[in-house]
Amino acid sequence: SKQGKKRIMPGSEEEVKSLVSTLKQACVDEDFVTTLEQSLHYLVQMGHVELAKELHASYHQLRNTVAQVTALRKERAATKAASEETHETLRLSYEDVVDQLQCPPMKEVTSQIFSFL
Image (cartoon, rainbow, N blue to C red; front, side):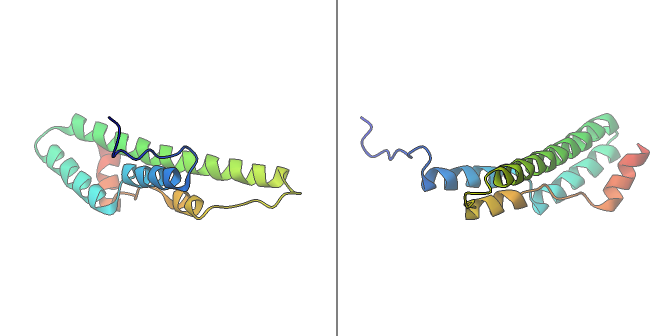
């Protein structure tokens, strides 16, 4: 039986909160970047340079993708708002949270090391 399981209604505020939470969890934080940098340095020291380079490149690809998607979303929202001049545009507080999502950069020293590898 499905008793006891609460279903989230599509389009509800609860669904939006859940989606925003999922997005926030999917984005990398400072602690993750620090751990990643330590792992990269360890891999290089152990002679696994190609693996370290691949991991470094993958993180930068993720970072760039998040930035591109955020910029595209903002651009689409601005275009939509401009085309709906006669209607007042409603901006949800969650949109500001989503607009702020990004992957932090690695330390400059890590970037410099990988620019030489």
